[in-house]
Length: 428
Ligand code: CMC
Image (cartoon, rainbow, N blue to C red; front, side):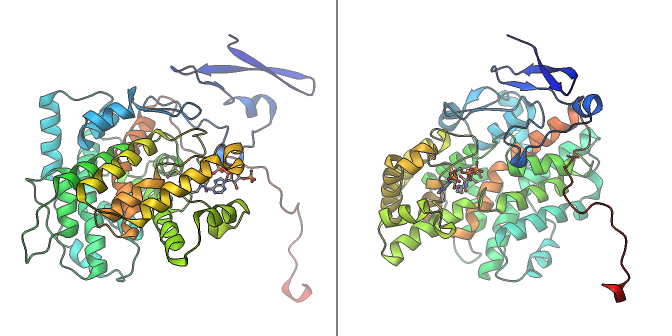
């Protein structure tokens, strides 16, 4: 197969090298295009732009394949744990037993927040969205830990990473507790990562709280499934912000904001709100689908469609199964699940969705699970952020280690006014 492509611009012909990845994906290297021809490329939404070479996550959107470091998501979902997956993503290989114990031990040592975070959360309005609170809290970590901010110092970076993974569940739970006016709960280091989060969310100082193992397991599974997804909007944000050599906390804080949007992670909250609307307004799922097809932005079928997957999202398949299992084990019956199943069935047979290859994505069923385990809708995206953390960290670190690393700085085609003179105010 050709290893370069020819581009003819006027009477000039240049060769563009073709880069091939380990799974056969091919891309044109245009890094010298501007210096050779004066041209840049234009690709709104970056649908055809590879921003980096990465060895972390592989997706084949046509076949519905997702692998972290080569390992299929189905195997990780069945056999691994979230912290093991975090290690895999960040360190590039599965840990040995001793490595995993040391890793989990170190992260567990960092679960407590600085006590001044109490007044930090206390200063936020009660109705602050948890994503805003989490982004602010992660950004604030750089004020609490100025000793570990240098991105080029390996030891400082390791401490930052462990602090961030350890403290994020605590910060997310604090955001929730503050919003409902309950005391912030200290972590319990005898609990697993997922169980500790549930404990900080739902325990109170007045009563003993036991984490249901069914809930602990499904939450860990959901975190694994969200752990990385290559160059999505929030990950690209983390990389771009980090490329200025700012610290990890500041970069991840920006990523949390990017994830919040309803086209990205915010969709999981929107899905449950959409299902509740259908239930409460008494409209049929068919009527709702028809509105979505008519391009009614208020009736976009949330949890459907994906820039990369033009087939079933493999995460969605796992989550759908988990959803049925958990609801059965917990003995929960919910109208929302019935509506979701109906919506999915109608949309998958509808020409509009078939032609556009719109399939349910990771967010379609996850909210039904979060809802069934008692999590309020505005916390769904914060749990997504908790899961995505290792991916952001792994991608941020990979970028800094890349020999081709430089600050991210896209160009533009200027379409504004050409040179025009300043007009004094009295003459306008
Ligand atoms: N409902 C109705 N129509 C849709 C939907 C939808 N959910 N998604 C895409 N379309 C239509 C869209 O209107 C367009 O139609 P046309 O060609 O007639 O103009 C066509 O399908 C292509 O869509 P697009 O918006 O150009 O695709 P995109 O790759 O730019 O956007 C998306 C992808 C995920 C933003 C979009 O599908 C969407 O808004 N989905 C709903 C929100 C959602 O579930 N987001 C979570 C994504 S997965 C998790 C994550 O990334 O965090």
